[in-house]
Length: 169
Image 1 (cartoon, rainbow, N blue to C red):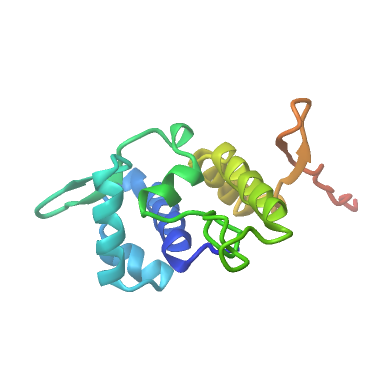
Image 2: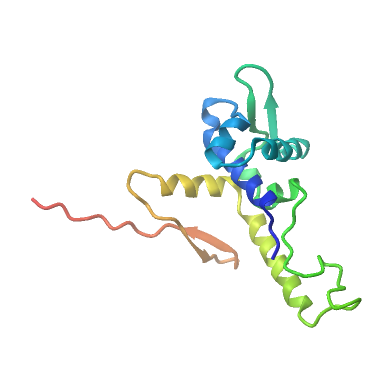
């Protein structure tokens, strides 16, 4: 499977932006420092994210970037696609020429896997990632949600019941 650093960094950077947007526009320098991503690389990614309408920028003092859409309306798949990235488990990039000029024996398997990954990433929104991160950092020490199959067959996030220690008196 190929999901390069470009797709991973785009998702990481836009999640960082969303988590820190309450104080106003977020600078790429701040994201670069927090996430240990090259500023020049972030500039390239954000140019693409801006072109596709996922982020907007403000110039000048106090400027930076902010989300152009609600986090609920932004899927991880859209973020990855915005930076010209795709998730493809086939060796041939979907061209069906993985065995010389012919399709390999397992091409359909890998093509189905690519479709399942794309479908999953299409269902996960930026809001889901924000909520998960906030639950992980909550003062109650909540754990990460567990993905379980919902009634429609898709994943459904459920939070494990926290164990509250007994207070000795």
